[in-house]
Image 1 (cartoon, helix red, strand yellow):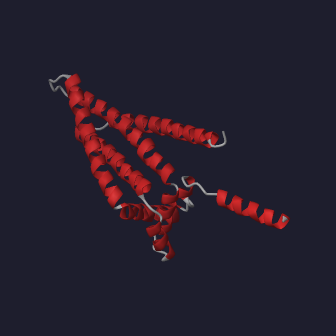
Image 2 (cartoon, helix red, strand yellow):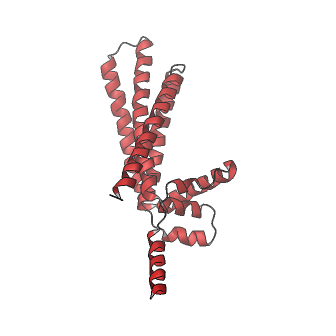
Length: 208
């Protein structure tokens, strides 16, 4: 029961973040696309797909990473190494946020953008079936997304050090520029069992 409560809380938080972020991005994108022409709308679609692929690469790299190279670089005080190490410590939460939350939001958002593009093409006087045009654009978007993520996963697994060091430098830059504090600590989980075990052993030894 103790382990089920944090998991349920984590699922509830992730679901809430997904709902509010997805609603905000979808409402904002549909409102913005209403004033754009066809080519800028296609650019927005490609941008949404690219964001989903990039975050999928980061989440996969965090899940596949090991601590050893980042510990060595952090001991040498290489910029971005400590931030990358925090990402590795919170790999499960970072991967869930990047792959699930951002991935699902980008998937939903790309579908809304495709629907807007189909409506723009139909309203411009082009004689074509909206159903077939929607099917073609959705299939093309899915092919680019799946192919890009498959390509990115190979890069993330074999080059996770370079990927996470790049992300670590970006996180370091934003933390120092905006003075946000350790942002990645929101995803990391501290291991307190070892400290509790040591404290119990110390108390037992004192009693003896």
